[in-house]
Each structure stands twice: as structure tokens, then as C-alpha cells.
Image (cartoon, rainbow, N blue to C red; front, top):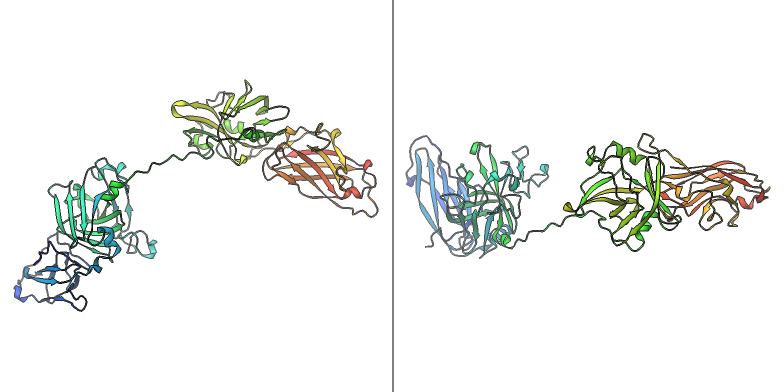
Length: 626
């Protein structure tokens, strides 16, 4: 006969009874073993080898405690299925009013293996499969490292269980199976909660299907437990695990609690990880009831684990690489152009960028001790400009006071060198105000409208730059108190306005500036003064227009505008012109405009209807930038 502790099967039936706590019974008549009516039946119709065994208890007024090696049961009728051939001993203890009655064991013989009972994926994940074994470790080592989980021990409510299931009312992902039940979770990281248990080698658990469902647990951190050998049963449907003559690895601090360490709920199980929960009863260590969920990893996973080296997330655009001439293009917009730049007060105007990573999100990140109301006022009323009008020029307008000079670029180091005495905008007396005339381009973007970060101070010990974020802006100057600025009036010399059917397309054109026209060499405006974020508006007056008898009488008029690098460019809003009079046309820019290549007003079709173009005069009354 094969001893039961050497040859095992397992049962496929529900509730398992824990017998670790004694119970008191009122004394009465104690039944004689001969009076106990029970049956142990092998169903050969289900399994020709006798693997399926039905247990029946027919004695009224008494409670059975079956022990068939792979587990225990208190059911009056239960079914056990053994996967492996061999001789098995069925033990029965009967609880009666007069005491516990021991019944002689019944030995059965299973003549064939039925390995289908251990072919479920959960059995394979736990053991490695039939004929295999798998060793598991608590996810905490001597160095205090948890390899996969945040720590070795989590806490759940007493109604939590298999984490991939649950009722629809809770989303089906918390393992809560009773609406309104004791469902909660706390998953502490060991590093911040070392009181959970000491770091150490807690031993190992090996689950095997080599001839039977055997388990070996080597306890290294709980005194007097040592190595335990037994059997186990996995209930794949109810997600429970029962160990006989052994208990799962755990910490000594809760070992004395009234817990059955072999009566386990499976919370999760994969090829490499496992979470097993045991009940902590009310009062254990002066704590309330909870499921203590221990986190395990396989020995193979631990041995082959290679920690992921988290590469720091460098800020977008950090340490940019420019083609030759590209930085100059970004700063000025191109040849014969200029761009205005303003501090990004609506976004993030200042940062300390260490090893490529900044930390501020907006001006409030360093409010008062760094950025303050004085900086707010400065940014609202000030700007800088880089241009290529007659050279490479830099202008700073700080609260209406303008200084200017030239600049150069060191392309090798991404440096902008301002003429001596010049620097970026700054609040007088403030510790963060720039004092250097050499600016380092720390960050830049493909989309120039997102701005550019200019470093002014470097701390070598921290690899850290103090940098300011400048974005494209206008030259409007005065804060109107509601977060925007007053519009700016652009001066224009009407003596230099060119009018007529200039392109000979039958239109009347008012040419304020055209890089390809007569106004290029002697315009009536200063191109560098053209800068707006939203729109430019022109009011003009026509005089001396006489129309033919068959003239249309009404005509569309609009601005055509292209800024210093042709972005933005396009037609403005159409207004109706019907002869002499004063009219206002507007060009709304899809992005900030700086400088100009083309700035004209066309009255479409009126040129062919005017009897005498030489008699027509025009004036630009006002140009307003917003």
C-alpha cells in the first residue's frame, strides 16, 4: 500500500473546514463507532480507475470531519477526485454531544492516473504542470528589495478575493463578491513601511505534481517551524488553495494569530507572481479582521530578474541641434526681418533646468521667493527684439525704456552673445535678474511659436541652468489691467504711400510696403515696428474717384499681409467700397506676426471703372496693432 503522505490525489469540492481552533460541546451520550453510519463510494462509471470518491455521512445529530489527505470537509455529502493512482486512506472523526468519535479509516485503491484533473491553467501556473515543480519566494529579500510587488504584504477586506473577478456593481476588478461587504485594499510599499516585517530570507515554497500534489515549505524566519512537507489542493473554480501538514511562508509577527496558514484564498496567480491571502481574525495583535495577502515570485523570476534602469525623462527640446543659420532664422524670422519676444507669463516663464529636466510648471511654482509681482509687471510691459535690419541687432524695451546693440551667434555652443552692456529683461535688484550678455539656448522646438529657453546662469555642481522662457509676442506696451495689453499705433508717412493700378489687374492698390515693389527702398513705416499677436487694422480715406456710367458701383476691399518670414500671410476681412470715403480693413493673424514682406490694400475691380486714376488720392489715417 502506498502511504497517503507519499501518494496523493486531490478533491474537487467546495468548502474546506479549518480545525485549528478547539470548540466546546455540551456533554451527552457518546456514540459507539459501530453506530456511525457513513459510506465511501468509488464511482467507476465516472472514472474507470476509481479516481472519483463520494463521501456520505448518514448519522443524524452528529457532524463529520473527513480527512482524505488533500484536505478536510464537514459536508454530509462530498465528492473527492484523485488525479494519481495509488492507495489512499480516508479518515473520519465524528463530533457528537458526548465527544469526538474516531472511526476506523477506510483505504481505497485508485488504479489509473487521471491527469485531466491537474491540467487547468491555474495548476500549471502554480506547479509548472504535470510531472513538474515550481519554487516560490516571498517578495522580500535580505537587502529589503521587493522585485515585482511594492512590498511582501498587502491588506484586503474579509470579503475580497480573486482580483480578476467580482460583481458588476464594483467594476469586476477588485475581487469583491458581496455588495456592501467588507471590501477595501491597502497596498503599502515596504520601503516606507518597514514595520510590516524585517528584511530577510524567508525561505521557499515548492509546489510539485511529480507523482502527486506535494508541497514543501522551508520556513527560515519563523522560529520552530522549519521545513514542512505535505499535500495541497487547488480549487480552480473558487480560487482557493488548501495545504495539509504545511502552511504558506509568512512573518513571525502574526504567526501566533488564530489563522490557518494552510487555508488560503488565491488573489492572483500568473506564471511568475502569486498573491495568497489568509484571514486575520478580529483581535489579532489588537487589529480588526482582514485578509493578509502575501506576495510571492518564482525562484526563477528572482534569479533572472534584471532591474530596469529608468532613463530620466529629458525635457522636450533640451540641448537642441541647429543647422547652420537656423538659430538666426528662429530669432529674427529671416533676412530683412525681426521678431519680438516676450516672457511666457501665461505659461512657464522661468525654470531651473538640471541635467536636462526642469521642475517648474508655471510662474506660481516659485511665486514670491522667485517669480513675483514685479516680474509680472515687467513682463506685461516689456519685450526684446532680434532683427536683421542693416545687421544683426538686439533691442530691449524694459518698461518703455529701450536699449539696443548688436548680437552674434556661436553656433558651436548654441550661444547668443549680446553687445557688451546688454542682457535680457530683469527686475532691478532681484537675485534672478540676468546680468550676463552671453545667453545659452537650453531648449527650442520645431514649432517656433512655442518659444525658446535662454539660460543666463549655470551651476556646475548641479549641472543646472537658470533659464527664461521667451515666446513670440508684439511690441504693444501697456497692461490694461485685465491681463491683456492696449493696442499699439503704427506710425505711417503718407508722403511715401504708393497708389494706383500697380499690377495692372484692374484694381486700386494702396501699397504701404512691398519687398518686391516701389516702397522697398523708402517705405512709409518702420518694418521692425510691425508686431502683433491678433490682428492689424488700417483706416484709410479715398478721394477723387469718378466712376464710369456702367460701373459696378460697389467693390470688395481687403488687406493682403505677409510678415517677415511669410508666416502668417493671407487676405484680411472684406469690406465694401463704393467710392470716396473713409474705410477700415482688418487682417486677423492665425499666429503672431513680426515685420512684413507685403502690406497692401486692394480695392478689387474698381480700377477699370475709374475714369481718371491720376485724380485719385488716398491717405492712411490710422494703423492699429492688437
